[in-house]
Image 1 (cartoon, rainbow, N blue to C red):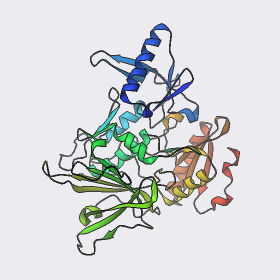
Image 2 (cartoon, rainbow, N blue to C red):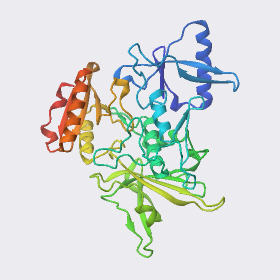
Image 3 (cartoon, one colour):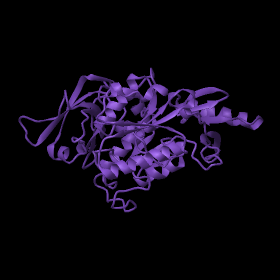
Image 4 (cartoon, helix red, strand yellow):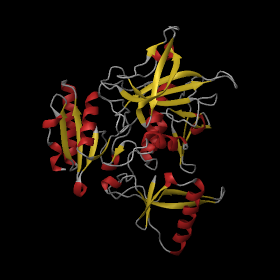
Length: 401
Protein backbone atom coordinates (compact mmCIF):
# COMPACT_ATOMS: atom_id res chain seq x y z
CA UNK A 1 0.00 0.00 0.00
CA UNK A 2 1.23 3.48 -0.88
CA UNK A 3 0.26 6.70 0.87
CA UNK A 4 0.90 10.32 -0.11
CA UNK A 5 1.53 13.03 2.48
CA UNK A 6 2.87 16.50 1.69
CA UNK A 7 3.61 15.33 -1.88
CA UNK A 8 5.86 12.52 -0.61
CA UNK A 9 5.00 8.90 -1.50
CA UNK A 10 5.39 6.32 1.28
CA UNK A 11 5.44 2.64 0.23
CA UNK A 12 4.25 0.86 3.37
CA UNK A 13 5.13 -2.56 1.94
CA UNK A 14 8.82 -1.62 2.16
CA UNK A 15 8.60 -0.54 5.80
CA UNK A 16 8.80 -2.79 8.83
CA UNK A 17 5.84 -2.83 11.22
CA UNK A 18 7.92 -0.78 13.67
CA UNK A 19 8.76 1.80 11.00
CA UNK A 20 5.11 2.04 9.91
CA UNK A 21 3.94 2.54 13.48
CA UNK A 22 6.56 5.24 14.01
CA UNK A 23 5.51 7.06 10.83
CA UNK A 24 1.82 6.87 11.78
CA UNK A 25 2.61 8.27 15.24
CA UNK A 26 4.47 11.19 13.67
CA UNK A 27 1.52 11.96 11.40
CA UNK A 28 -0.89 11.69 14.31
CA UNK A 29 1.08 14.28 16.29
CA UNK A 30 1.44 16.55 13.25
CA UNK A 31 -2.30 16.48 12.70
CA UNK A 32 -2.86 17.88 16.21
CA UNK A 33 -0.94 21.01 15.25
CA UNK A 34 -2.28 21.47 11.72
CA UNK A 35 -4.72 19.65 9.46
CA UNK A 36 -2.65 16.95 7.79
CA UNK A 37 -3.80 15.54 4.46
CA UNK A 38 -2.98 11.89 3.84
CA UNK A 39 -4.08 10.12 0.66
CA UNK A 40 -4.23 6.51 -0.53
CA UNK A 41 -2.47 5.98 -3.87
CA UNK A 42 -4.47 2.90 -4.86
CA UNK A 43 -6.25 4.76 -7.67
CA UNK A 44 -3.44 7.04 -8.83
CA UNK A 45 -3.67 5.95 -12.49
CA UNK A 46 -7.15 7.46 -12.58
CA UNK A 47 -5.78 10.52 -10.73
CA UNK A 48 -8.06 9.82 -7.76
CA UNK A 49 -6.60 9.99 -4.24
CA UNK A 50 -8.96 8.93 -1.43
CA UNK A 51 -8.33 10.84 1.83
CA UNK A 52 -7.13 8.87 4.86
CA UNK A 53 -6.26 9.62 8.47
CA UNK A 54 -4.34 8.04 11.35
CA UNK A 55 -6.32 6.47 14.19
CA UNK A 56 -4.92 5.83 17.63
CA UNK A 57 -6.18 2.68 19.35
CA UNK A 58 -5.81 3.27 23.06
CA UNK A 59 -6.63 -0.32 24.06
CA UNK A 60 -3.69 -1.69 22.09
CA UNK A 61 -1.55 1.49 22.08
CA UNK A 62 -1.35 1.23 18.30
CA UNK A 63 -1.63 3.63 15.35
CA UNK A 64 -3.37 2.52 12.18
CA UNK A 65 -4.34 4.11 8.88
CA UNK A 66 -8.08 4.40 8.26
CA UNK A 67 -10.59 5.83 5.81
CA UNK A 68 -11.27 9.54 6.27
CA UNK A 69 -14.06 10.05 3.76
CA UNK A 70 -15.25 7.08 1.80
CA UNK A 71 -17.32 8.65 -0.94
CA UNK A 72 -17.68 11.71 -3.12
CA UNK A 73 -20.86 13.76 -3.43
CA UNK A 74 -21.97 11.49 -6.27
CA UNK A 75 -21.77 8.54 -3.83
CA UNK A 76 -19.00 6.88 -5.78
CA UNK A 77 -16.33 4.77 -4.14
CA UNK A 78 -12.97 6.53 -4.31
CA UNK A 79 -10.71 3.57 -3.57
CA UNK A 80 -9.63 1.22 -6.32
CA UNK A 81 -11.90 -1.80 -6.59
CA UNK A 82 -9.15 -4.11 -5.29
CA UNK A 83 -8.04 -1.90 -2.39
CA UNK A 84 -8.91 -3.38 1.04
CA UNK A 85 -10.14 0.07 2.12
CA UNK A 86 -12.87 -0.14 -0.53
CA UNK A 87 -15.96 -1.06 1.51
CA UNK A 88 -17.69 -2.81 -1.40
CA UNK A 89 -14.57 -4.90 -1.94
CA UNK A 90 -14.56 -6.00 1.69
CA UNK A 91 -18.20 -7.05 1.50
CA UNK A 92 -17.56 -9.04 -1.67
CA UNK A 93 -14.59 -11.03 -0.38
CA UNK A 94 -16.48 -11.67 2.84
CA UNK A 95 -19.15 -13.40 0.77
CA UNK A 96 -16.56 -15.95 -0.31
CA UNK A 97 -15.21 -16.52 3.17
CA UNK A 98 -12.30 -14.04 3.16
CA UNK A 99 -12.36 -11.43 5.92
CA UNK A 100 -10.25 -8.30 6.26
CA UNK A 101 -9.28 -6.77 9.62
CA UNK A 102 -8.39 -3.09 9.19
CA UNK A 103 -6.74 -2.80 12.60
CA UNK A 104 -4.37 -5.70 11.89
CA UNK A 105 -4.17 -5.15 8.11
CA UNK A 106 -4.84 -8.87 7.85
CA UNK A 107 -6.92 -11.16 5.62
CA UNK A 108 -8.21 -14.41 7.11
CA UNK A 109 -9.74 -17.52 5.56
CA UNK A 110 -10.36 -21.16 6.44
CA UNK A 111 -9.09 -23.63 3.83
CA UNK A 112 -9.41 -26.77 5.91
CA UNK A 113 -10.86 -29.64 3.89
CA UNK A 114 -11.99 -31.27 7.13
CA UNK A 115 -14.17 -28.38 8.31
CA UNK A 116 -17.94 -28.36 7.94
CA UNK A 117 -19.25 -26.39 5.00
CA UNK A 118 -19.85 -22.75 5.79
CA UNK A 119 -23.59 -22.43 6.06
CA UNK A 120 -23.33 -18.66 5.66
CA UNK A 121 -22.42 -19.17 2.01
CA UNK A 122 -25.22 -20.07 -0.34
CA UNK A 123 -25.14 -23.46 -2.01
CA UNK A 124 -25.58 -21.75 -5.36
CA UNK A 125 -22.04 -20.43 -5.12
CA UNK A 126 -22.89 -16.95 -6.30
CA UNK A 127 -22.20 -13.54 -4.80
CA UNK A 128 -23.72 -10.12 -5.10
CA UNK A 129 -20.86 -9.01 -7.30
CA UNK A 130 -21.09 -11.99 -9.63
CA UNK A 131 -17.61 -13.46 -9.29
CA UNK A 132 -16.40 -15.06 -12.46
CA UNK A 133 -13.50 -17.11 -13.68
CA UNK A 134 -13.62 -15.67 -17.14
CA UNK A 135 -14.83 -16.09 -20.69
CA UNK A 136 -14.69 -19.77 -21.51
CA UNK A 137 -13.69 -20.68 -17.94
CA UNK A 138 -15.74 -22.31 -15.22
CA UNK A 139 -18.26 -19.81 -13.89
CA UNK A 140 -19.80 -19.57 -10.45
CA UNK A 141 -17.39 -21.93 -8.73
CA UNK A 142 -19.09 -23.28 -5.58
CA UNK A 143 -17.67 -20.87 -3.03
CA UNK A 144 -18.07 -23.24 -0.09
CA UNK A 145 -15.38 -25.56 -1.49
CA UNK A 146 -11.86 -25.06 -0.04
CA UNK A 147 -10.25 -25.48 -3.48
CA UNK A 148 -12.26 -22.53 -4.79
CA UNK A 149 -11.51 -20.38 -1.76
CA UNK A 150 -7.82 -21.13 -2.41
CA UNK A 151 -8.23 -19.84 -5.97
CA UNK A 152 -9.94 -16.62 -4.87
CA UNK A 153 -7.56 -16.12 -1.94
CA UNK A 154 -4.60 -16.18 -4.31
CA UNK A 155 -6.25 -13.64 -6.61
CA UNK A 156 -6.95 -11.47 -3.56
CA UNK A 157 -3.26 -11.69 -2.57
CA UNK A 158 -2.18 -10.63 -6.05
CA UNK A 159 -4.59 -7.69 -5.91
CA UNK A 160 -3.34 -6.69 -2.46
CA UNK A 161 0.15 -6.25 -3.94
CA UNK A 162 -1.23 -4.76 -7.19
CA UNK A 163 0.05 -7.50 -9.49
CA UNK A 164 -2.96 -6.89 -11.75
CA UNK A 165 -1.63 -3.39 -12.52
CA UNK A 166 1.08 -2.91 -15.15
CA UNK A 167 3.36 0.08 -15.72
CA UNK A 168 5.93 0.00 -18.55
CA UNK A 169 9.40 -0.43 -17.14
CA UNK A 170 8.19 -1.20 -13.64
CA UNK A 171 9.60 -4.05 -11.57
CA UNK A 172 7.38 -7.11 -11.29
CA UNK A 173 9.16 -9.02 -8.47
CA UNK A 174 6.39 -11.61 -8.22
CA UNK A 175 8.08 -13.67 -5.53
CA UNK A 176 8.62 -10.62 -3.33
CA UNK A 177 5.04 -9.43 -3.77
CA UNK A 178 3.57 -12.81 -2.88
CA UNK A 179 5.85 -13.10 0.17
CA UNK A 180 4.72 -9.66 1.29
CA UNK A 181 1.05 -10.50 0.78
CA UNK A 182 1.51 -13.71 2.79
CA UNK A 183 2.56 -11.55 5.77
CA UNK A 184 -0.99 -10.17 5.76
CA UNK A 185 -2.92 -13.45 5.45
CA UNK A 186 -3.99 -15.92 8.12
CA UNK A 187 -5.12 -19.35 6.94
CA UNK A 188 -6.80 -21.55 9.52
CA UNK A 189 -5.62 -19.00 12.16
CA UNK A 190 -1.96 -19.37 11.18
CA UNK A 191 0.18 -16.81 9.37
CA UNK A 192 0.46 -17.89 5.75
CA UNK A 193 4.08 -16.76 5.42
CA UNK A 194 5.10 -19.34 8.03
CA UNK A 195 3.69 -22.20 5.95
CA UNK A 196 4.41 -20.97 2.41
CA UNK A 197 7.00 -22.28 -0.04
CA UNK A 198 7.66 -20.46 -3.31
CA UNK A 199 9.54 -22.29 -6.05
CA UNK A 200 12.95 -20.73 -6.56
CA UNK A 201 13.43 -19.91 -2.89
CA UNK A 202 16.82 -21.51 -2.25
CA UNK A 203 17.05 -20.56 1.41
CA UNK A 204 13.97 -22.53 2.40
CA UNK A 205 13.15 -26.16 1.82
CA UNK A 206 9.81 -27.90 2.03
CA UNK A 207 9.26 -29.27 5.54
CA UNK A 208 6.40 -30.38 7.75
CA UNK A 209 5.32 -26.78 8.36
CA UNK A 210 4.76 -26.04 4.67
CA UNK A 211 1.12 -26.24 3.63
CA UNK A 212 1.01 -24.04 0.52
CA UNK A 213 3.42 -24.54 -2.37
CA UNK A 214 3.43 -21.92 -5.13
CA UNK A 215 5.38 -22.26 -8.36
CA UNK A 216 5.31 -21.18 -11.96
CA UNK A 217 3.97 -23.60 -14.53
CA UNK A 218 4.34 -24.00 -18.27
CA UNK A 219 2.21 -26.82 -19.61
CA UNK A 220 3.85 -26.43 -23.02
CA UNK A 221 7.45 -27.01 -21.94
CA UNK A 222 6.96 -28.68 -18.53
CA UNK A 223 3.68 -30.59 -18.60
CA UNK A 224 2.58 -32.58 -15.53
CA UNK A 225 2.98 -36.30 -16.16
CA UNK A 226 2.11 -39.65 -14.51
CA UNK A 227 4.78 -41.25 -12.37
CA UNK A 228 6.26 -44.10 -14.42
CA UNK A 229 6.52 -46.51 -11.52
CA UNK A 230 3.48 -45.46 -9.48
CA UNK A 231 0.40 -44.95 -11.66
CA UNK A 232 -1.60 -43.42 -8.78
CA UNK A 233 0.77 -40.44 -8.63
CA UNK A 234 1.39 -37.37 -10.81
CA UNK A 235 4.52 -35.24 -11.05
CA UNK A 236 4.16 -31.46 -11.41
CA UNK A 237 7.24 -29.52 -12.58
CA UNK A 238 7.51 -26.20 -10.75
CA UNK A 239 9.51 -23.40 -12.35
CA UNK A 240 11.06 -20.57 -10.35
CA UNK A 241 8.61 -17.71 -10.00
CA UNK A 242 11.01 -14.97 -11.06
CA UNK A 243 13.06 -17.12 -13.43
CA UNK A 244 10.44 -19.02 -15.37
CA UNK A 245 12.92 -20.85 -17.60
CA UNK A 246 14.50 -22.53 -14.55
CA UNK A 247 13.09 -25.83 -13.26
CA UNK A 248 13.12 -25.48 -9.47
CA UNK A 249 11.67 -28.84 -8.43
CA UNK A 250 9.10 -31.49 -9.24
CA UNK A 251 6.32 -32.21 -6.77
CA UNK A 252 4.74 -35.65 -6.56
CA UNK A 253 1.01 -35.56 -5.86
CA UNK A 254 -1.94 -37.92 -5.78
CA UNK A 255 -3.46 -38.39 -9.23
CA UNK A 256 -6.94 -38.47 -7.67
CA UNK A 257 -6.36 -35.05 -6.05
CA UNK A 258 -4.83 -33.72 -9.26
CA UNK A 259 -7.78 -34.87 -11.37
CA UNK A 260 -10.32 -33.07 -9.17
CA UNK A 261 -8.34 -29.84 -9.06
CA UNK A 262 -9.11 -26.57 -10.86
CA UNK A 263 -6.77 -26.88 -13.83
CA UNK A 264 -8.41 -24.79 -16.60
CA UNK A 265 -7.09 -27.23 -19.21
CA UNK A 266 -9.82 -26.14 -21.62
CA UNK A 267 -8.35 -22.63 -21.86
CA UNK A 268 -5.74 -21.85 -24.49
CA UNK A 269 -3.22 -20.71 -21.86
CA UNK A 270 -0.19 -22.85 -21.04
CA UNK A 271 1.50 -20.62 -18.43
CA UNK A 272 0.44 -19.68 -14.93
CA UNK A 273 0.74 -20.37 -11.21
CA UNK A 274 0.58 -23.80 -9.60
CA UNK A 275 -0.99 -23.77 -6.12
CA UNK A 276 -0.74 -26.93 -4.00
CA UNK A 277 -2.50 -26.90 -0.63
CA UNK A 278 -1.52 -29.55 1.95
CA UNK A 279 -2.91 -30.73 5.28
CA UNK A 280 -1.77 -33.16 7.95
CA UNK A 281 -4.19 -35.60 9.54
CA UNK A 282 -2.54 -35.30 12.94
CA UNK A 283 0.03 -32.98 14.52
CA UNK A 284 3.53 -34.13 13.64
CA UNK A 285 2.47 -35.88 10.43
CA UNK A 286 3.75 -34.81 7.04
CA UNK A 287 0.98 -32.83 5.30
CA UNK A 288 -0.54 -34.41 2.20
CA UNK A 289 -1.80 -32.53 -0.82
CA UNK A 290 -5.54 -31.84 -0.62
CA UNK A 291 -6.22 -29.19 -3.27
CA UNK A 292 -4.48 -28.28 -6.55
CA UNK A 293 -5.15 -25.15 -8.60
CA UNK A 294 -3.62 -23.85 -11.80
CA UNK A 295 -4.12 -20.10 -12.27
CA UNK A 296 -3.59 -19.19 -15.99
CA UNK A 297 -1.40 -16.10 -16.28
CA UNK A 298 0.87 -14.15 -18.59
CA UNK A 299 4.51 -15.21 -18.24
CA UNK A 300 6.08 -11.75 -18.57
CA UNK A 301 3.87 -9.86 -16.13
CA UNK A 302 2.42 -12.60 -13.94
CA UNK A 303 -1.07 -11.14 -14.45
CA UNK A 304 -3.82 -13.81 -14.45
CA UNK A 305 -5.97 -14.10 -17.58
CA UNK A 306 -9.24 -15.84 -18.32
CA UNK A 307 -8.78 -16.88 -21.94
CA UNK A 308 -6.17 -17.27 -24.64
CA UNK A 309 -7.53 -14.15 -26.36
CA UNK A 310 -7.06 -12.11 -23.19
CA UNK A 311 -3.49 -13.37 -23.06
CA UNK A 312 -2.88 -12.05 -26.57
CA UNK A 313 -4.41 -8.66 -25.75
CA UNK A 314 -2.40 -8.36 -22.55
CA UNK A 315 0.82 -9.11 -24.44
CA UNK A 316 -0.17 -6.52 -27.03
CA UNK A 317 -0.64 -3.82 -24.37
CA UNK A 318 2.77 -4.65 -22.91
CA UNK A 319 4.35 -4.46 -26.35
CA UNK A 320 2.74 -1.06 -26.93
CA UNK A 321 4.03 0.08 -23.52
CA UNK A 322 0.62 0.98 -22.13
CA UNK A 323 -0.29 1.32 -18.47
CA UNK A 324 -3.29 -0.85 -17.69
CA UNK A 325 -5.17 -2.90 -15.13
CA UNK A 326 -6.65 -6.37 -15.52
CA UNK A 327 -9.57 -6.60 -13.05
CA UNK A 328 -9.39 -10.01 -11.38
CA UNK A 329 -12.36 -10.23 -9.02
CA UNK A 330 -14.16 -6.92 -8.78
CA UNK A 331 -16.35 -4.62 -10.82
CA UNK A 332 -14.52 -1.32 -11.44
CA UNK A 333 -16.77 0.67 -9.12
CA UNK A 334 -14.07 3.31 -8.65
CA UNK A 335 -14.81 4.30 -12.27
CA UNK A 336 -18.51 4.52 -11.43
CA UNK A 337 -19.15 1.28 -13.29
CA UNK A 338 -20.94 -1.75 -11.92
CA UNK A 339 -19.22 -3.83 -14.57
CA UNK A 340 -16.01 -5.82 -14.88
CA UNK A 341 -14.29 -5.09 -18.20
CA UNK A 342 -11.51 -7.27 -19.54
CA UNK A 343 -8.95 -4.46 -19.23
CA UNK A 344 -8.73 -0.78 -18.31
CA UNK A 345 -6.06 1.24 -20.14
CA UNK A 346 -4.77 4.54 -18.75
CA UNK A 347 -3.52 6.93 -21.43
CA UNK A 348 -2.11 10.44 -21.47
CA UNK A 349 -3.98 13.46 -20.05
CA UNK A 350 -6.12 11.26 -17.79
CA UNK A 351 -7.65 9.39 -20.73
CA UNK A 352 -9.23 6.08 -19.75
CA UNK A 353 -10.18 3.37 -22.24
CA UNK A 354 -12.14 0.20 -21.61
CA UNK A 355 -11.18 -2.91 -23.57
CA UNK A 356 -13.45 -5.87 -24.14
CA UNK A 357 -12.15 -8.96 -25.91
CA UNK A 358 -15.00 -10.38 -28.01
CA UNK A 359 -14.50 -14.12 -28.03
CA UNK A 360 -17.95 -15.49 -28.86
CA UNK A 361 -20.63 -15.08 -31.52
CA UNK A 362 -23.72 -16.14 -29.57
CA UNK A 363 -26.59 -13.63 -29.71
CA UNK A 364 -26.94 -13.40 -25.92
CA UNK A 365 -23.21 -12.70 -25.54
CA UNK A 366 -23.28 -10.02 -28.23
CA UNK A 367 -26.33 -8.36 -26.69
CA UNK A 368 -24.58 -8.21 -23.30
CA UNK A 369 -21.46 -6.80 -24.94
CA UNK A 370 -23.51 -4.09 -26.67
CA UNK A 371 -25.19 -3.21 -23.38
CA UNK A 372 -21.78 -2.84 -21.72
CA UNK A 373 -20.53 -0.69 -24.60
CA UNK A 374 -23.40 1.76 -24.15
CA UNK A 375 -22.77 2.03 -20.42
CA UNK A 376 -19.06 2.67 -20.92
CA UNK A 377 -19.78 5.43 -23.42
CA UNK A 378 -22.46 6.96 -21.19
CA UNK A 379 -19.82 7.38 -18.48
CA UNK A 380 -17.51 9.13 -20.92
CA UNK A 381 -14.90 6.40 -21.38
CA UNK A 382 -13.33 5.45 -24.66
CA UNK A 383 -14.52 1.97 -25.66
CA UNK A 384 -12.28 -0.42 -27.55
CA UNK A 385 -13.49 -3.81 -28.70
CA UNK A 386 -11.20 -6.40 -30.23
CA UNK A 387 -12.68 -9.23 -32.22
CA UNK A 388 -10.50 -12.21 -31.41
CA UNK A 389 -10.34 -13.32 -35.03
CA UNK A 390 -8.71 -10.05 -36.07
CA UNK A 391 -4.96 -9.61 -36.19
CA UNK A 392 -3.68 -7.39 -33.40
CA UNK A 393 -0.97 -6.13 -35.74
CA UNK A 394 -3.69 -4.36 -37.72
CA UNK A 395 -5.61 -3.23 -34.62
CA UNK A 396 -4.85 0.47 -34.31
CA UNK A 397 -7.38 1.43 -31.64
CA UNK A 398 -4.66 2.28 -29.11
CA UNK A 399 -3.16 5.06 -31.25
CA UNK A 400 -5.36 7.75 -29.71
CA UNK A 401 -4.35 6.98 -26.11
